[in-house]
Image: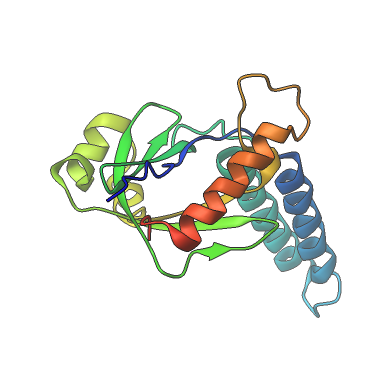
Length: 179
């Protein structure tokens, strides 16, 4: 019986300009929507401030990948998904069935495995995060577009290698054993 060596995802993520533009557009849309709500001045400014603060936090972690808790690497090894954050902490994770695979993007929804490595107490010790933050992070999502994959010969554009890795990821998720 022939043995097949199935490609396993090992993805190094980088900031995606497309996700950045979409995030800015959605933030501006949310701010524009506030103008049509019948709210008093103070409440309007408070909501606008909350939207801007949330947008900045999301962009630091999910778009620019500069937050310590930003996921910068996703890989599948020995039938286990692993997520690596910018500060070097690796989490074993389980890919959830509600993940989305489309021709334009891949949205991977993970739940962090409850191992000794990823208990809230150990996360606080390793990352210095507040206990509330560590507990609330049992579920993580990673949005991947072709321009968000790092390539060794990266010129800043969407290279053929990025498109090929993105295609392989989609095939692996649809037909491979990663789900």
